[in-house]
Image 1: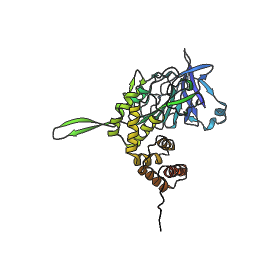
Image 2: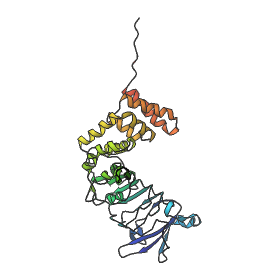
Image 3: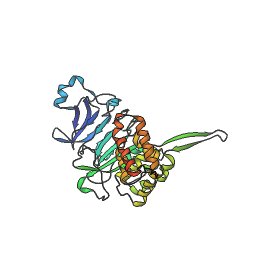
Image 4: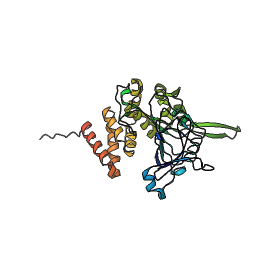
Amino acid sequence: MRIHYRETEDGVEIVRCFGMDGRIELPGMLGGRPVTRAAAYAFSDRKGHEDQDVLVCETEEGRLFRQQERLLAGDAVESVHFPDTMRELGKYIFYGCRNLKKLCFSDCLTEIGSGAYTGCRSLKRLEVRFLNSRRSCVPDILGDLWQRMDAAFYEPCGRRDNSRGVGRGGSREDDVFEKTAELVFPEHYEEAVENTPARLLFTQHHGSGNNYRQCFYNKEVDYRKYDALFIVARAQDKVSVLADLIFGRLMYPAELVRTAEEDYEDYVRGHGPKIAVYLTDAGRLDALREMSRRELWTEEAIEAAVEHAAAERSPDRGEILSFLMNERHRLFPVRKEKYEL
């Protein structure tokens, strides 16, 4: 990768990136100084002109494949992993990045310029590393986007305060960090509806996403408020969204109180067939295993899942089908009838 940058008073500012891979991972140091900022329009292809007063850093791989590299901006950007030194993002940094799907950053990132996510319709996942506190810029990002967003939070291994069990994370430093929370923020949108006879125009809100985006206090997640909104999500969101939301909380139960846990479990038991079919479709073997661990299966649910997995006959469904059939045999064995002469 080739990086254009400039030096600032407190470190380095990223101006442009060039390379072949749209999954961008920025270094924490350039020229012996920390990378603290990304310039306005750094990953946008809507920039009016290219900066000339820049320094250049190029990897050995970048030199070898110079002829094949491209400007990593606009549709070329798929994901960006910011270093723990990054503190500020310039305005319109991702303007028009329609294929951007994931952002990774730490709680050191505190300032984001206006219009940063304009046109980022595919952005759906945030991964945040907590180094100093549990405050982050996640609420600022969520406030600019209407689509469903998933947020995973990671903490240093020795700092967990959750005795109910924590899964391993998938971050670059997963030998140091572990995932402590996996939260779903559903989509929301507004629709203008006209009452013609009364000559009135009113706004109708859809989806529970706006409610869930209010579950922050001083930029820190309020887990109790998040869980209390489940009754709203049940009324407005699809089973697929609810299933991911539920198992995100059950598998990574940060500050999850027993009453909320029971609400989630009761919903799974009550809607077992639909949830099991969705999890099978989504390849969520981890969540299916969680259903077994928590004894959430009903006979109707596991029959629906087995039937659905078997009908697909897809090579990647083999492990899931095998697991489901074993669970069906273990939980609901077929009783052999006895015949007496």
